[in-house]
Image (cartoon, rainbow, N blue to C red; front, side, top):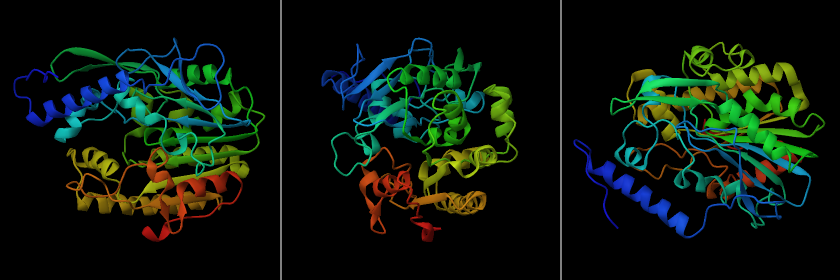
Length: 386
C-alpha cells in the first residue's frame, strides 16, 4: 500500500495519521461494513442508510441518515456528534486522522466518509442482538452530523482554508435535521415511547430540538425521555455565534443568555415543557476532549492538561447543580473512565455509543440506568465523582 505523498512542512505524524485513516476506510469498504442504502421496506434488525437528497454536509457532499427497524413501536431519535465550528479559524480546521494523530487543532467532521460514520452504528445503544441492550428491539432514526453547528445552522459561511483557498462551510445542520426527520418518519410514523438522545455535539442539540421533534413529528407521544451525553463547552459568545455565524432560527438563539449553551437551552425547554418529560444528563467528569475545546476557547491553546481538566470538573459541578434546580426529574450518570490517550490524561469522551455503555459504575451500567429511566425509574449515578 503506497504511503501518501509528503507535503512541504507536514509533520510525519500527520502523514501517519492520514495513512491509517485511509487504510481503515479502504478496509471498511472492502469488508462491506457500511450499512447498505435502503431499497424498499426495511427488514427488522438491519441498519440502513437512507439517502436525503435535500441534505448537504459541511464540505458540500451528500447527506444521509441511518435507520433500524425493531419489534416495537418505541423509537429513539439520536442526534449524532461530530465537533463544532464557531468562527473562520475553526471552520478552516476540520477533523482528519492526521490532525488527531499529531495533536493539531481539529474541530468538526465536515463530511460523512466511512471512517467517521462506522462509529455511528453497531456499538453501545446502537448494538443489535446484545441481550444487555434494553433498546435492542426499538426503532432508530440516527440524524447524522457533519456541519459543525450543533444541528441548528442555516448558513453558507465563507472562510480561508489552511492552504489559502477560499471555501464555504455549509452550516446546514437544521435543514439536514428537518429533512432527515421527514425521511425517518416515513418508516416510523408513530412512537408509543420516545427517547431523544445525542452524544457530544448531538448532546448540545437535544434540548434545542426536542420541542421541534415533539411538536412537528411526534405530537401524540406522551412518554418522552431526553438524554444528553457529553454536552458542556463554556463560551461567552454562543448567542452571537448562533445568530450571526450559524444563522439559526430566532427561537434557537434568543434563549442564549450566558456562556453555557446547553444549560440555557434546557432552561428554555423546561420553561415550555415542565415535568412532562424525563430529563437525563451524562458526562465524563474530566473529559479530555471537551476540556481541550474549552482551553482553546478560553486561552487559544488546543490541548488538555490536568489544570484545565480540573476546571472542567468544577464547571460540570456547577452545571449539574443548575440542572437539578430546574426539576427533581433531572437525573445524572457521571463517569470517570480513563482516557486511552494516556499522555493527554483526563477521562473519556462520551459513552452511549461505545462499549463503555455496558461497563458498570457503582454496580450499574449506563445501559441499565437508561433502560430503567425510560421505564420511569430515575436515579443518579456517579454524583460522588464531583
